[in-house]
Length: 212
Image (cartoon, rainbow, N blue to C red):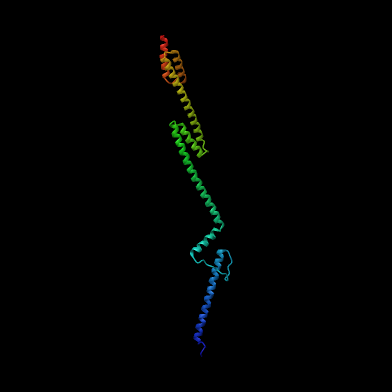
């Protein structure tokens, strides 16, 4: 009859409806399983009625993952450890650079000291002391340089006085003032007995005095 399904068609429709119900049941089952997995990952209870939003791009997914990782306490601990390591590396680099400058200043100072350039050597030792005040050697070498500088000044003054006495003796000898000449030569010898000039002139004067 018109409007009535034939037995064969009814069976086909019934089979299609059954298949559809089975598919819906399978979809619901899969959805429930997926929600359970998601709940386990997030630590939150998620019902089948919950509205879920999915990032529309890979970049958004990565950003979400990064933000989630950054919020974890172990990330903060890792960040602190990394900062501490970076600080140690920076400190070690600074110390290495400081040591290099210190070693160069000391080496330059020693070279100048060996060349009897006491003033210049002292400047380099002072530079090394400024770079690393914890080192004892620069202070020691500065003291030694000061001693050499003082000795050099004393020697220069002695040489100046010796030459003046010798010159005065020569002038007196030229004027035939033998006793005055002898006194000046004696003064020069007292200042520096290692030099021969005053001794030789003294011997000459003694001969002249003896011949009078």
